[in-house]
Length: 420
Image (cartoon, rainbow, N blue to C red; front, top):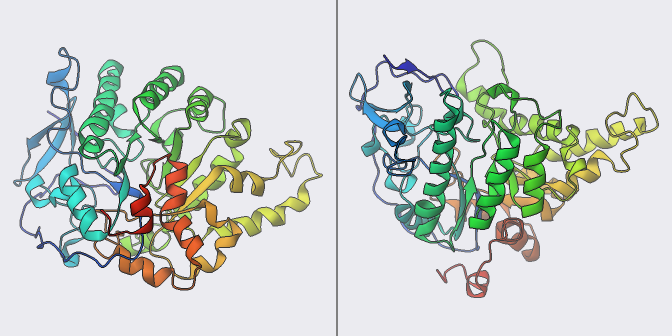
């Protein structure tokens, strides 16, 4: 009997059904004002993602979709039932249904699963290019798919299969408009480093790494255990994306706290891992490493800079200023050198953009999650950026992402967002 694996918010297969999942008609094409690269979207792994992608001897054990009690569908992987096939897939559904995830693939908007359909949705929204993270099956940072099984050969083959599918099928639909983002191999950092190098040579520009590794049962980032992978990322220019929730759990608010409370403090979920990675000294040991805080917003970053500057008065105390005592660089300098931040539908936060620097800010759509600005991204950006100079707007909406992920934008599209 398959054992049940619960998800980020404790989803279960009990009572799954198909009664309340409505797909709305296509929205009208948005009026375009800006060229946009979204630095954070998601792909719902489609049922055929792993077909014929594992070695022949392991193919029968690849993740597959099965029917479950109540008429729903779930992923089955090495005798573990993963009940959520489309975590937070809200785009294209009525807002009244957003608290209930689709339980059958037929209830998911096709653009969430299939890249050619995603291109159509990007066209409707006026988004030129997109970087997409995994969904429930893999986990945002790839942790779930390689910890639900104890067979490391199967786990590695499955990680490689996902990455092959993502590059060949997802990004392959139009390489000019998709930025390849891999999931890492976590069980052996030396092997993981070789995977990074191999994938960089194949065309990957980023890796979705867990913001915390200890929650998945691996050594903490406050060790040098992960240095081989960090070194490989630095050498290849592979951006480390730390997506909120990639640790497999979110910080606890308190017993009985409603979902609305968790959504409200979302920025805090990015503040904590940013601080952790800053003090891990990983970006000090690897000064050319690029770290992107995905789906965390920017409103909290000014407060972080203020606090770091306040603590700078301890810099002559070898105990109080650890681990930066004698490092030859301050935490604020590392933050502004190594880290990038993704804004999502913010207004007041833009007034503090100078605290981290305009060159450190990207925008995201977060399709198909409930936080997503799709299909109103252009309108949302017009509202947010109304008082910002044109040269800064270009940096924020596409140029910073283009440079960070080494993803060129054709000159015609730079000049005219209607040119695609």
